[in-house]
Length: 212
Length: 212
DNA sequence: GAACGATTGGAACAGACGTTCGATAACGCA
DNA sequence: TGCGTTATCGAACGTCTGTTCCAATCGTTC
Image (cartoon, rainbow over all chains, first blue to last red; front, side, top):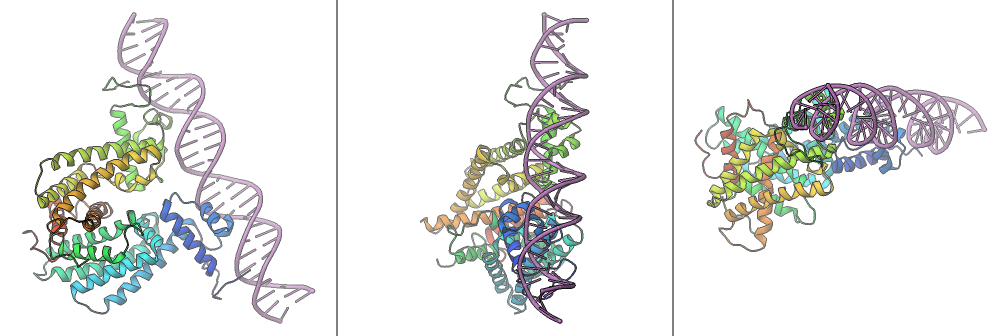
């Protein structure tokens, strides 16, 4: 039952189709729950009801599977953010939109983003380098906005180290969400989003929090 | 060459002495670098120059080894923080001291704290519950301080969810440090500490950053 | 120096792992 | 109907894993 959608299935293990989507989704779910190292190909095969050997028709190795998940997810997020950033907004509004888009992306690709966040180090060589380059671009995009907000004072070299730290703090808040987020307890997401933006822009003691 | 320091070596696998310390330190170093699942007992044996079977004289199982690292480290951190908190400080000053103590603890137990931060889920059953209880106490301590700072306005139920989120954001900033900290690039630690406190208390646009 | 408990290590077990091979089945198209 | 490509599977491989057994060693005490 070959139900391939695209006719671009070629030699070098670059398969596509709904089976591939199923495998990537299932693997992301398992790896998000148990980690990459603790998830076996056999687990993924069991989850997708495919055979163990059949997995290797869709990816070259376990690491290749991890790479496929990370690359497509991060590229998709980056595309969204670069489009948002092309609006050329004010610094504060730019950060609001970036954080909002980031959190919105979480709701659509929670498992995949968790893997991007915690399993980069499980990649090696060229695959590591490629995903890290995407991450670097995302960092630069954010650091630029943070730098703009900070640059109300001046723009010397010292501010670069400062912007780097503040950017990493913001990523810390965002990335750590995976460790505690509970869809029921933390609904609505808008509250969480507003609070994160508020802490980033005004801190605990700054302007009054947004009206609840 | 029995060089035990304490004469309290009893039946139920509760050994001590410099060998145990060496094992815990080496295991923490390896696990911090490669993760718990990716670190084998054989790796630890190689690092400590002890035999594979000899490991099991000091811990009952691999998970017990992980538990020993997490429990003693977290208990030590908690002890420090609860002593600091007993000073009964002002809310803002209390948060400053808590973050400062936390970061100071990082510099002394980086590997161990990284494991406490990222490998709680690798514990199961009673061991999981015990370490989680320590973590919960640490969270409550912090959330109490954050709540005090927030409570300048009022103290209804809504503020509890708010304090929870802000506390988790602060832990996000702190815990994510393990993913990017570079002792050379990020020296001196005081700058990092000041900036984290500033972001938490005043945000990016609040009171002017501390004089560099 | 003999007897003892504390400590160490070589060798092996059973299971799980990633990966490969060869055969089979399903399909699009002539 | 037949053919070539696409897709799938059962079985096996070599390796690594956590753990255990049992014998050997050590320092200490009689």
